[in-house]
Image (tube, rainbow, N blue to C red; front, side, top):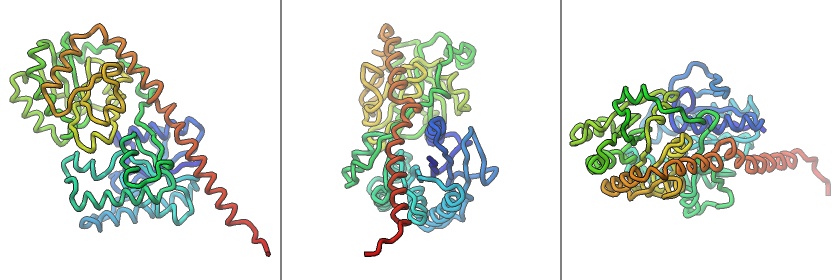
Length: 413
């Protein structure tokens, strides 16, 4: 079976998007499927029109001249469709597998229609809600409603749809999508790449000034919806309850300057440590020195509908997890069993929950083991990728049947 993946961007860029993509494609190749990927105009600079990275073949699409809103996006879709079609004619896939955002689905659908190929459209988040979460859009605006309409149309036209969680599926069904054609392909961890946790890195702990301390932290991107301002606001109450506690923040993003200023003004500023961005291959060192990973996402459509990847990485690393009680987290964390949930947007609730967790060390090892087992059994990409098989087989079989009918000799009455 040959699957051509249609992507917004890909390796060697590092993001949650590219890591999920790498995990999917690597696991598919391990099953004996042939895969390749075409990245879109927004991937940015590249070294060659075709290149292989981590064993994955990528075809690149050149940037297009920017234009005013709508016209610029339509130019991107047209250019991307031309590139996908050229690759598809040469590589001859059985299936097109487009990944969000919706512009990718629009370009892929044009090619699917022209070449008679089946299309699976995979949604990782709704583009309009991600814009609201990133502070670049407003819920209910004209642009928001237009993108939502395009998403609904793309889902209706695709032969099959995959989403990363139940929240996204429920939303699509409420819009009128056929539930039977929606596959849930949840976020997972490639345990071959991110498997065994490292031992405690004393040298790193001493470098950060947290050796011997109780530690909690966040590793990821600093967007407003992540709620890191709530976490920093909770720190004085946490330090009052646990004087040896330190907070380690690894990463960067749009909110970094504001968060650093907030931390500097905190009465417990000396207990808050900003590390900055670190190479992905070094991330496991930071997991090794953090007792509890905290995910204080704010309550909004994006966080209610979409499950994040980072809590799964923390569980794979046998770290404790604590997170706000929003829909996306509830699909990953069982409160009091594999993690701790606390009320969102509430520094006092966060502080109280974390203080209780640090006071209950006797339960830590059992909880770490349950979290790791959850990832191994339910969120391991080596297992998860099998979810695509029946859908791929159905789509490929439907195409083969259609082709055999179109090439059948006419029967004279």
